[in-house]
Length: 140
Image 1: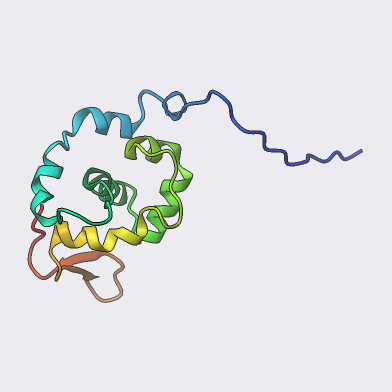
Image 2 (image 1 turned 120 degrees about the horizontal axis):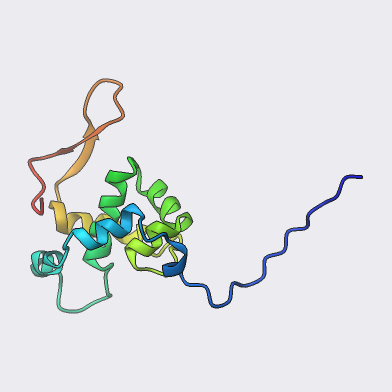
């Protein structure tokens, strides 16, 4: 006799992302090893004194690192990965990623890090790898 499994999702109670990400995970090692305390001070002059709060520059920088280490080529795919992987959520220090929580501000924040005229362009013929165009990144 074939049984069936009904999908039933009860809320998780008293579970922390801290407990779910292994202590020897790569992103834990990266968090311990890489000091990003310079980021806020580095981009401070590019932010206005008032207005809507932006994405935390350190979180944005960490997202760029996740894109690099996971070989992700699009911000949409990055947001999917960030929403789906507990290790990335832990590394970013956020509880959850929603469709509009980060991507809507990444273009503006990219301008602060890389300059308003920087953009990505294909590196070669038929090659999907990307190259930062218009000089070097200001922040890097």
